Image 1 (cartoon, rainbow, N blue to C red):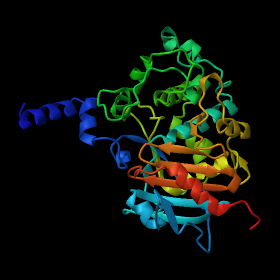
Image 2 (image 1 turned 120 degrees about the vertical axis):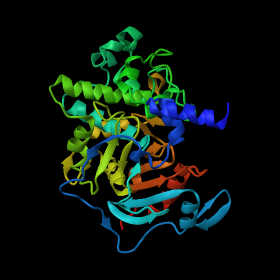
Image 3 (image 1 turned 180 degrees about the vertical axis):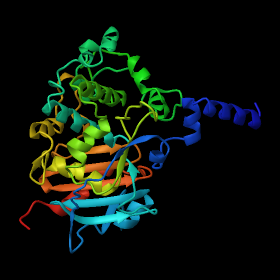
Image 4 (image 1 turned 120 degrees about the horizontal axis):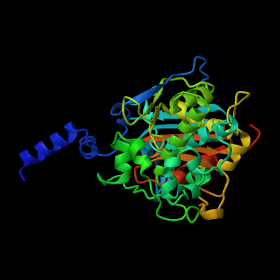
Length: 374
């Protein structure tokens, strides 16, 4: 086939709205994806609550990685970082932006949105839309009963132990992840979900769990006569009360009648992502207002290896060590890292992971903020 024929096939695929065509046009996920997909607005708070800024910067000057010591700023920039923030005791102690980014620049969350989805499930339980995490999926999505989902609970989805049949490959244009990310038929795709093993057997990280949680939340709201979208519920319950400073969005699968991509795709600047970490640092309380139940925050970030659950993952949050720290994480090296013992939140956003174990970097940075009485 000639190059001209290949181009013709590509144009036809794209023109028919084909997922595969969009995959090749966009050529894998990148930090500009918030501009490619339709979205719902997530407005800045009418009463923004900015962080205090330290009069004297406190952050790392150098870093030693792979037996090489170099200035920390150079280390960050060489590894495709676009934003790096350190918030200690609710004060911004260190901030760096690279590659044309600044504090107002919107950046997509990728899978950090999974941790936000968990916040919303905890909120929906507190608000009475959902009874508890032991409710079966089929209480909300009865059409999946025929596929065995009456055995799957919300906790299975939260812990990634559902046994869902889902290909998490991001380089296969015909895979499930590409279909969910680039496709425009999430409702249809979820209606055909299947299991490949019994729920509760073992942990397997697949984004379909988080997308199904989004459908469950949407159905739970509708069942109580609440017509808010998932984005509106996030805005009312968390985003606005946190005092977010900048307008944000949540990407959806299609313009008309779409649903949020709840496994990814909240689009906001680094400072507002940081507030999500600060909220959990304070166990769901922000500036004297209870936004998330404390018991939900603690349950979401506690090591649990029962019923197939993994020690390193709980309720859509990663647990990088046994020291009580936890983090939200996205595929291109997006992180909101929280160290409660040191009252510390770190945000790293990037165009690529950059060949670095960022959890190790965060732990080393955290050592600068040992608990004391300063």
